Length: 110
Image (tube, rainbow, N blue to C red; front, side, top):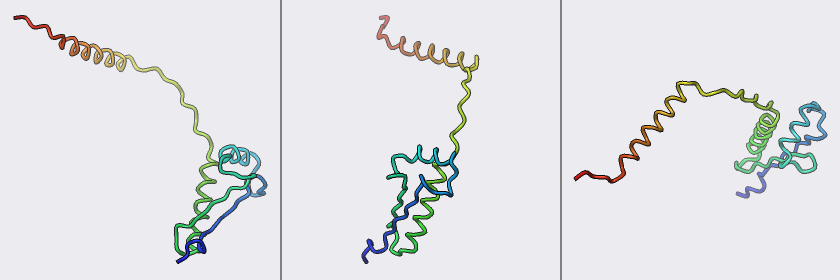
């Protein structure tokens, strides 16, 4: 079977689509800048032997790409200090490790 005849290309004009709000459009354009050609996002699907299934796959992939790109940025991490107990455990472990290494000196009392 000729798979090129069932191949599907789906194009979506992110830059000029009236369905995309202006504040969301800037985020989409910034996040998808490497995938866009003149503001148009193109999705290609050719993994199925039937064109209808390739159309459905392309639509699902387009929706996933747009959903991921339009997600709000994650909240900033609030920096915290390590607890006193964790600091003490860290120092104690370092001292134990140093003692182990110091014991490998090769000094033997004969």
